[in-house]
Length: 150
Image (cartoon, rainbow, N blue to C red; front, side, top):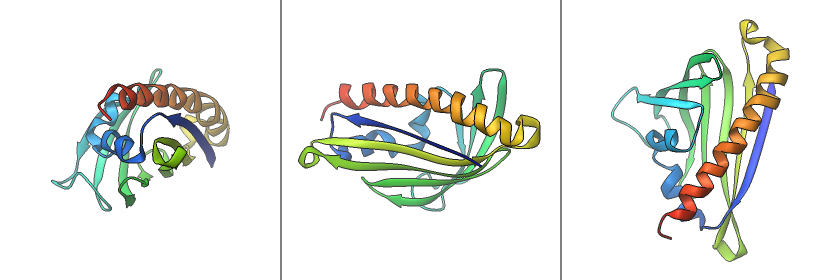
C-alpha cells in the first residue's frame, strides 16, 4: 500500500476553499490526472455519492471507481477507491490565521494491481509520480481559490 500526502497553504477561508472543492464534477478543473467524472445516480454531494473518474497519468488510462465515505462541509471529504487501484483518500481543510487562510491536505492510501507494478508500482507510481502530479494539482487549486471572489 502506498501512502501519499501533499499539502498547501491557501490564502482563503476554509468556506471559500470548500466552494471550489465541494462540486466533485469540477475537480477536473484543477486535477490534471482527472479527465472526466460520471456520477452513478442523481446524487452528486455527500456520503454515498458514487462516480467513475476517468484518469490519465502519462500513457496509463484507467477508470477510478469512487464513493464518498466522509463529508463534513468546509472541513473534509473522504473517498473509497474500488476500481483497478484500490484504497482510501481524504481532503482536509484546516483553518489558519483565525480562519482567513486554509491548510489543504490531500492524503491517500492506495494499492496498485500487479500489472501496474504492484508494490514497486506503488513506490514509483504513487510515491514519486502521483505525488508530483498532485503537488501541481494543488498549485492549480490555489490559483482557482485565490482568483475567485472571497
